[in-house]
Structures are given as structure tokens and as C-alpha cells.
Amino acid sequence: MIFNRPDLTEHVFAAIAEARPRKLLVIADGPRPERAGEAEKCAAARAIVERVDWECDVLKNYSDINMGCARRPATGLRWVFEQVEEAIILEDDCVPHPTFFPFCEELLEKYRNDKRVMHISGNNFFFRQESMPFSYFFSRYCLSWGWATWRRAFQYYDPEIKLWPSVRNNSWLLDILGDPRAVDHWKNVYDLTLASMDNVNTWDFQWVFACWVQGGLSILPSANLVSNIGFRGDATHTKRMEDKCANFATTEMIFPLTHPACMMRDREIDELIFNQVVLPPQPQPNLYARLRQKCAATLPTPLRKSISSLRSRLSSSYSN
Image 1 (cartoon, helix red, strand yellow):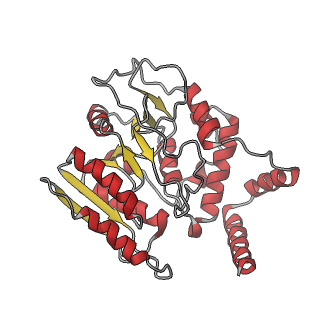
Image 2 (cartoon, helix red, strand yellow):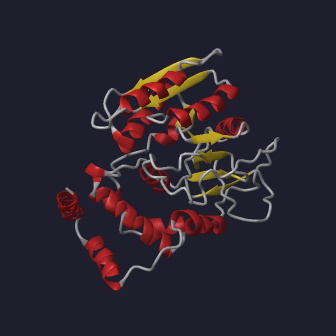
Image 3 (cartoon, one colour):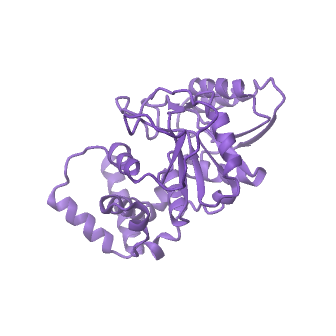
């Protein structure tokens, strides 16, 4: 998936060229007309794809208009799985280690027909210090800076999370996560996502929801296989260059893979992921903020949407 950062696209394309895939599907968003020079940057990123010099079937899904970082990945990935049964997915700032590709390829085949597994990730930010006995482990978290999945799993992806209101108030999320703090956090995330659907700029929260609501597991490697080099000012989300996950070093995956003895998620690592990645240390909200969150959670979805829309308009008016 590419957009307007040709210098980063160059790095990712070099890694793909080294792997020499037989089929390459490219999703590109279009430029924003109000951004000077962006059309040229988008064109430069797309030109890099023209350098394929190995035997490869290149399929392109390029948008002439800017769809944004919610709709463009969502529509693009849907297109991908109309073309193929399974795919390895990289964004323009996610540089894989060479062993990332055979790691995904082997596990795509091993779990191709196992509906319990919905996601294969290339990320591990050293959640534990001790070495792991297996090449990968199972988690509830779908880390997606370099990942792979199947059409059979992605069919459940809904960028509008229409199921959320009907499942919000039962115990399934606690059953999935086993941590009341995580449940509160993700309830807030999905409440805000649904209430602000017209302004949502993420696609991956919705993918996590699809995996959770189907009871799916994610595979995470014992070594970090993908580095996100896109932490900088022109990023949409990853602007904090001091983030500990920025430019995280990759490590070689050792083959043959050592498979886990059983298929159970690692609850201890999931708790570490929540504490270290999902919810980094932050100031405790004041009493007013906590009460506001609790009150907002009790409102019907249409009312939350109306309030969110009004707040967005007021914020825009003040900023102008």
C-alpha cells in the first residue's frame, strides 16, 4: 500500500524485489488537491513500482482521488482478496527482514484451513526478555506493520463495525481479553469509532474487531521481522520519532520453524502488549474526564454520533 512518500516506498520495494514474488498487488491512494506538490510525490511513488524486472504479474489498484487512510486500505484490501486467496501485506513504511516472507508463506500454508487463525504478524517488540522456545506464539492482538491473512478471514472485515452496538454490552470482550482495563479501553475506542464514522482515519481497529468478534487468533513471531521507518512529521499517525517502536530493529527468523505445542493465546504477552504498546503510560484523567467517558458510554449510538459531529464542527470553527 503506497501513497505520497517515495523515499520510504523505495526501501520497501527493494525488500520486495529481493524476495521476487510471482504476483505483486499494489494499492495507491490519490493526491489531495489542496496539498501543493503531493500529486508529484504520488506519481513518484507509483513510478517505483514500474521497476519490476523479474517475472511477476503486477496488478494495480490506483485511486485518482484521495480516499484517506481509512477508506483506501479498506477498499484496496477488499480488492486484493477478490484477486487472491491469501496475501502478505506491507505499507510503504514497513521494511521487512528477508525471512519475513518465508515465515508468512509457511504459516499461510500451515493454517490455510484452520479458521481459528485469522492473522499472521511480522511484529515483536521484545515483549519478553527471555528467549522463546517456539518460533511464534498466539495472541489476540493483530499487529499490522507487515502481516498476512486469507480471504476466508478477511471476509469478516467491516470498516463500519456494524456489529458493535449489538455485542457491546455482553461479556464476549472480557472473555476474549480477560482484562477489565483492556475491555474499557477498547469499548471507548469502538464507541468513538462508531460515533465518528464520517471522520474515521483508521482501518486497522476495525480489522482487530473482525478478528475478535469471530474469536480469531493472531500469530506473532518470536523475533521482530518488520521495522516501521515512517515515524516522522509527514506521517498520519506515527509522528512521534521518540516512540520506542519507531525503526525497531529486525532479527532473522531461524528455520526450520519450531511450532508451538498447542494453540492457546499467551495471556501474559497479551497483557504486556496492552501495557507497552496499546496503552503506554499516560497521566491519569481527571475526575471530570472520567465521568464524561462513563456518561458518553451510556448514550445511544445516534446521540453519540450527533454530539461527536457537533464537537468536530465547533472545533473546526474555533481553529479557523
